Image (tube, rainbow, N blue to C red; front, top):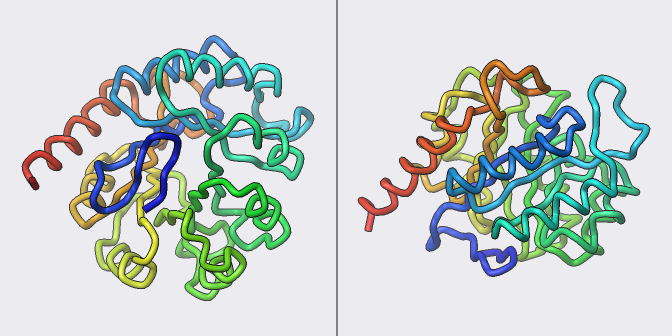
Length: 250
């Protein structure tokens, strides 16, 4: 079990749903707030963005550090948990005072210095185990084991099964179950890169206690990751089905 603010996360608790707003705001703070509203209205537990240095990544527009503070305050006013994935060492330090947890994205799972910099912040950590360098799109068990050795049995840690393909066109029940069995000492979740909500729902039925799902303000809105993002109605439908499954399981 881990705890993010007042929310306990683990097999015996309701599924923790993260609306991954990411960079779907196109550098526009107003749209970023709309993404927060979508997450709130859909019943998500948290909304997550991504934080880069201001001069990083020329292929899309990023929000500034000052605007990130504004977003955090907006989330607080709406009663939803805010956090963001750091994509630089300076972003790790910048986020420390304003996030209740860190998300480690798949590309950084094997970057020892990066994850050590996060570890010393002594916050809950959610780490995706996808991979951009392996054809299967997922980290090897050796890579995950090495990451966990650096964490040194950190009990405030959750792992997300993740296939780093955009979009991901399948969900392997056997691979997820293998991952859950091998690393079941930690809360296990699923980070989806698909508009097919059946993948996330299947993972919940198999015991996922965290779902991370990309979102967009509309299907026709041109933004990064739009081909893996749910529109507001789809996100609401996913969360409603998760809660219905939980009710029926009781």
